[in-house]
Amino acid sequence: AIEFYKKTLKYFLLESKRVPKYIRLKIYLKSSEVLIKMGKANYDAGNMENAIDAFLRAKRMAIKAKKLLKKRLIAPRLFIALAHGYLARVYYGYGDLKKAVKYVDEAMFYFRKIAYKLKKQMLSPEKMRLAGELSLYLAYEISDLMRTFSKIYLELGSFEKGINILEKAKIFSEYAVKISGGTDPDVLNKHGLLLSIEARGNLYLQKFNNAIKIGKAALKNFHRIINQKKDFIYAYNNFSFTLNRIAEAYIAIGDLDNAIEVLKSQFHTERKLSY
Image 1 (cartoon, rainbow, N blue to C red):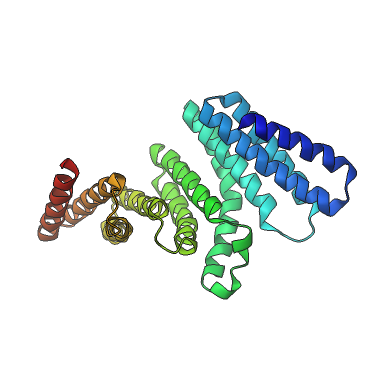
Image 2 (image 1 turned 180 degrees about the horizontal axis):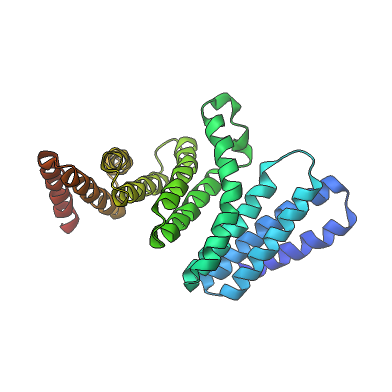
């Protein structure tokens, strides 16, 4: 895969030297996309230095595309944000939280703006102009990256920042659920997991009623997977994990009756997992 991406990139860059501006724009964007895929392939293969190099080059290509544009297309900003996001993930894997946070903040600068546009357009389905540029795959990837961002801040004890990122990540995962028809188990599980982590963050902040409300929203997503009668063990695992968080919140506010009912549900879920 890495060799294929290298050959594709070489072709694009050769072409960019002898074509008009609007074609050059497309080449820069395509090159940025290919470099991000190359970076991910290197990351998956454990070639971290090559991954970092590819993500930095992807960012430079996206910046070139952005400079060519007069109108504010989402694509260049999206690729800049993705490059920063993947760099944050690499440095988080290295344990270098300082650099990871730097790239998280740079990625979030763009993701927040895209999330704002996306949220507005989801309220008017007939105006879903972003749909052409933001595919299901990209929305799924962005929400997954932002889940990593929130984990970084939660580990640093910055719970408010972690939850704020999760709230933005939800916009992308809700979009992914919407355009997948609400039936894709992987998309539903990812969305449910974001909500479950947000519920946990609210527990840390002692916002117990919020934790219960968000936890119940997470359960609905896991239920939709389980109701498809498919063998998705992770859905049951996440369902059980979320029930535990809801029970903790009920105990914290002194509602022991509801806490016991939730723990009973968790017990039955754990029994199903053991069969």
